[in-house]
Image 1 (spheres, one colour):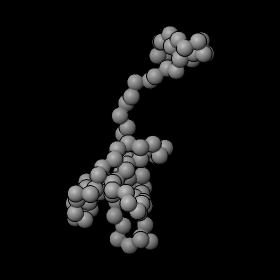
Image 2 (image 1 turned 135 degrees about the horizontal axis):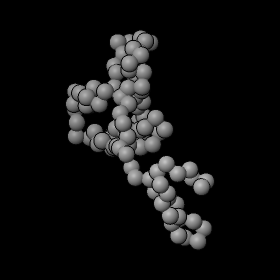
Image 3 (image 1 turned 45 degrees about the vertical axis):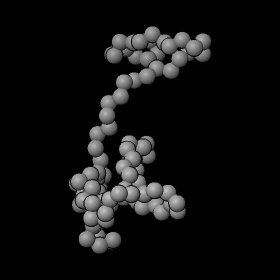
Length: 96
């Protein structure tokens, strides 16, 4: 569940983990792994394996293997003049 395989001729196999917004989180090379090792990796990552292709997925696994994204510092874009705007207090409204 929530795992899609795409065969790309000539490309080295890799597992690409995406966020719910389809942002790339991580790439894991699979070339040196056996099928058993790949199956174990996918299970350790939290993917749910259905008994049959049309089997229902338990509610707790609907968004599996969702994991929290690392908290990245907020970056402010420079103004038109190329200067970075001054930092605001956290509680301050952006229009103030």
